[in-house]
Length: 444
Image 1: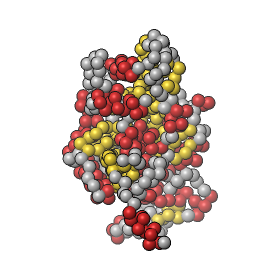
Image 2: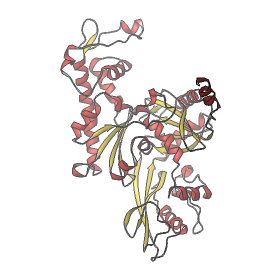
Image 3: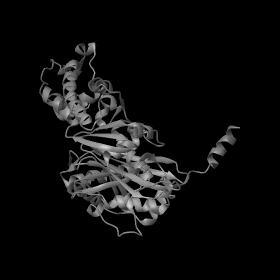
Image 4: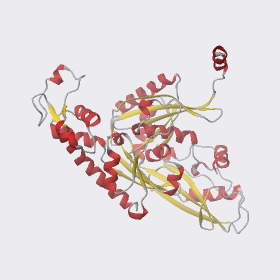
């Protein structure tokens, strides 16, 4: 019987891959890459992933082209080695570059008749022509949902009757030069760029459910140098603010407070740090130097306030962390209030990104903001390594999910009504008419 089962398992056909997606998340702390496959049945699986310490990137901007290119190539090669396959093109996430979100509302007259596919195309062309990039690059221009005579929440208006047909389009803008630098760093690594995706949008695909995005939720992605605060409602990203602070600033606060090196402060924060104090912290002494430190490092100068064994009280470490975290949380609260996400109109706050891995952060933030808070992680994906199933890699997984869905972009519309306009230089239009029509039929 066991032999029969074994033979049956061996005979089971292996799922064939129809598509392969490559994604690169270029952060200030680390650069990570992932290769995802989609089977002929539509199932997604992670084929391989890899990461390395970031170089040439500061607060989401490329500051050293050669170093950034090397780090990107290295991260992709690690993912390719784990996947057993290579990729020629990748989707890349953009966390800096002055991201700005905007919602455009457009309506056209229908006159009470049945809505046809040509009406939807005409509407989206009108919406496309109303995009005002103001000299910036358009990363996305996507229809979120339609309206019939002012009634919102219509997913597919085709075949319905209305006097007026409308659409809400989400437009994501970015500064052109930083985006071009990011693309060039990837291209110099011998990779083609499929698209540049705003990091908050990619993270939303990983961490937020469709119901959360519809009802209203705030997503806070805490990176090393930048924290992006975004608000979703009605199925789309409505507002976005960037804070030039992140988990790296907390590390710097620890290094400065105790007069130690940054890598030591990072280790103390990650291994022994917390955003919540406990009564036993005063009794626990933490060694500043780790077991893998070199003899020269271990015999280095004493940390400020350390005992004769170069240990510090955990309570002092947590005090420094919570003070720095309180500054960041205060900025997050001001951003949410500025976007109208406060008081009775506020919903849940979801924390993600590498900075969300700090112990006790959800409880700390919930108390400080007086809002329900949870930690956002990527959904369970076949083949995803356990080490990458944490908030720090949620954006990377979300980028792959975004690539697999490949949402409709109204700039791709080829029209029988008007000639195509290109917004934002090389990122303006990259898709063909046939692909757009297929996407409209599938998603709407």
